[in-house]
Image (cartoon, rainbow, N blue to C red):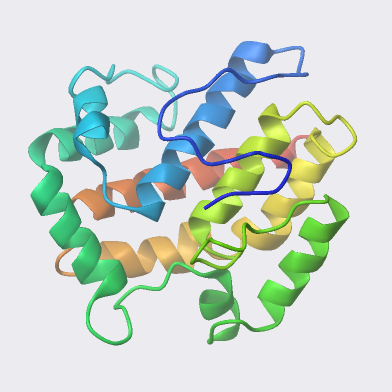
Length: 218
């Protein structure tokens, strides 16, 4: 999964250029979007599992709304392993024929893949001069692509597009309507979901926090 302008999904934290006056908070947001993009794209590998073995459980913000779901996600990662996570990912998102859970906005918003929500998203991405890597398998309305777009809009150095208003527009139109509701509900209801149920719960909480943040500027 990648974007134009050389902005590619990273499996590990990378230096980010920030323009917010509260750079620490913005860095945290960008890193969380990057982590979520990575976890929703593919099952975690050994290196990512190792990072969670030493992850602090009071993060991202001690005592905050995210603390309990973050602790549950860390615990689920520590209770799983590479083989189990891969099997779970396969059961939920791959499978034989149509996957049990689809990770695309069009499916959850319009009931089918490659529908009007994807067309609208591509128009908005074109305004940002962002395009999907032709080599990528997933379409732009995949949850990982959308989270990577948000990470870019928070951490990128092109201030013409990497700003709070652009973040708000993409989030409101293409993430909030389905990620924390339809997708999270579908994952948590799946009988094979363990690690990804914890991920869905944390993602739902993170989307709620982001929504509240954008409420404050509207």
